[in-house]
Each structure stands twice: as structure tokens, then as C-alpha cells.
Length: 140
Image 1 (cartoon, helix red, strand yellow):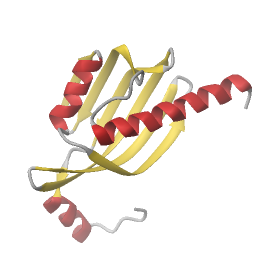
Image 2 (cartoon, one colour):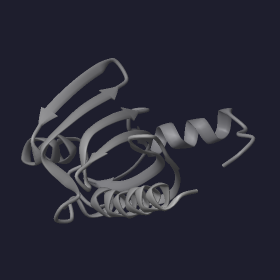
Image 3 (cartoon, helix red, strand yellow):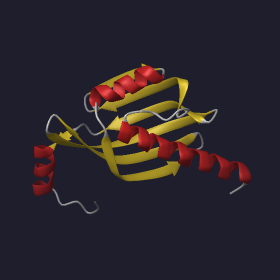
Image 4 (cartoon, helix red, strand yellow):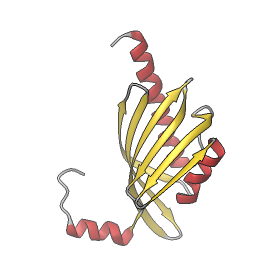
């Protein structure tokens, strides 16, 4: 790996760590997103988009209004940024929730400029229990 690739990989890893912190806190660290961020969010049977940091954060908070936990993640660099796969858990209105998400981030000028989000949909406690009873996963 040459010096430019190492710098790009290091910056992508830093942004991915900051992005996980954003998922867990609901507040983006300064400089994580470019001011004109474009977010394209796909969930089961629906698709939403946002332009700008405030609108993208509002889109996130509409679906996940409180803090969450990311117990597992996988990071891969791409030619333009990174891909991050996460499992996310949170509590809302006395209910436990879970989802799996895939984020493709394009980095420009040291910040995330474009973000594509693919979400499995939010599973409540009953759905998680049903899945555990019905399916034997080969990997956790």
C-alpha cells in the first residue's frame, strides 16, 4: 500500500468510527458530513432522501430518535470512501429494537459527501424472538 492509499484508508477508518459514534449518540461529530451531504435511504418497501447535514440528521432521528448501540460492525474501504455494515440496537417507548444496516459513504474533502443507507427494517422484541425460534444462523 502506498502512502496516499494508507492516508485514504486511515481517514476512511476515522470517519467510519465517527459515523458509528453518530449512530450511537444521534449527534454528528464536527466535520463528519460535508455541508451539502446527500443521503439516499432505502428501507423495506420505501425510499427517502435528504440534502444537507440538518435534513440528513433529521431523517435519522425520525427513525431512531434516541441513542443506540452498535455491538457489531464491519468496515471495508472503497475507491471513493468506505462501506460499513452494522447491527444496531436501541430502546424506544419501553420497547427493544434491532436492525441491520449497510452504509456506503463517498468521502470528499475529508468528510462524507454522499451516503447510501440500506436498512433491513426495525425489528421489535417480538420479531427478534420469533427469528431466534425459527432460524438457526450459521454466524452471529
